[in-house]
Image (cartoon, rainbow, N blue to C red; front, side, top):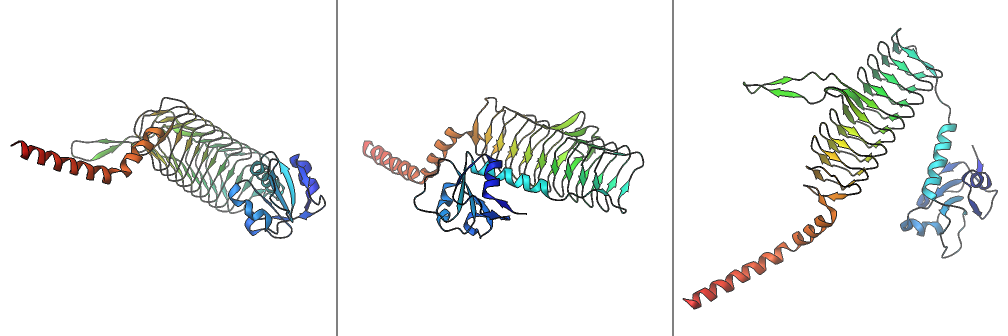
Length: 347
């Protein structure tokens, strides 16, 4: 499918700088741009490629000032990155979508399916499951009894959703995700053995949530583990029983959140963060990569870093001191030597 610069600019409400009739049929990275493709420039460190790329159309910010002439047609928009994302979304929606139930899927007679549902081969759907309109379930998915999946949600291959869990509308669940597995609950016994605590709750995932590949979200011991609307989870994330994650919070890969911790809305948690259980983290908090959070973060908008996690300003001061430790040790040794000499003279 081809699009002219004029059509793209009209859709994005952008301004054309160059040939309005040039056509593109594919996308490319700006450093690898080819004729007939569209690219974008959002990060200034890639600006040098603007003058060498062969991409036919490039989305740029309106305030971009050119150092020299470019070969490509530019479409100036308020935010090139967001505009590019909008085009990708439009393109994805234009692709043909699969519909129907594969003859090798197992669907309980007590389940209910909405309009235009797709259920691939080797999918198992348990009793009293409810699927909304336009739900797409790809091959090899397991969905337990009493699960609800709302409109337009996509469940990719290899996902396991245990019984009684609820998935909202417009969600994307990537391959290998497990939702509703038992929380890690065991009571130590006198003989040093452990007795399992039954996990009787469920997982509730609200609308417009995306969960990355091979992540696990445990069911609650009682009540619900809750992922609020707009949350985005990267790959390989562990969320324990009774955790609650607030609206529009984003969490990067390999982060682990222990049981019953409550995370506010609009937070940003970087990769490999560990958060202990039963904590409360305020709204708009940012947690740096590889941080270990062991205490509540009560102040909204806080930025913390390190293990144990400290306010970023204090942590930077600590890092500066740490870097100077060899020099400080040398000075201390010199001072001790001088003190020793002074004491010997006094004697």
